[in-house]
Length: 77
Image (cartoon, rainbow, N blue to C red; front, side, top):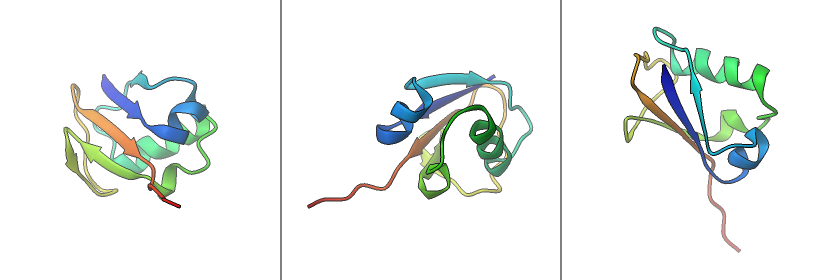
């Protein structure tokens, strides 16, 4: 089981700050595809991804117990 954390607008779109997903052996990119089909996460591709508190890329492979965080870009005014 992978723990997925959403921040800011992604949290609102998913309707939760955290979900548990069976994604052992998937890449970050494959996890994103799965999440986009489950939730209304149109901006997920624009978010930074961290796995176990370290920024990662689309090819990072996930294993059970990982914590994946999706952090949308921050803008100021």
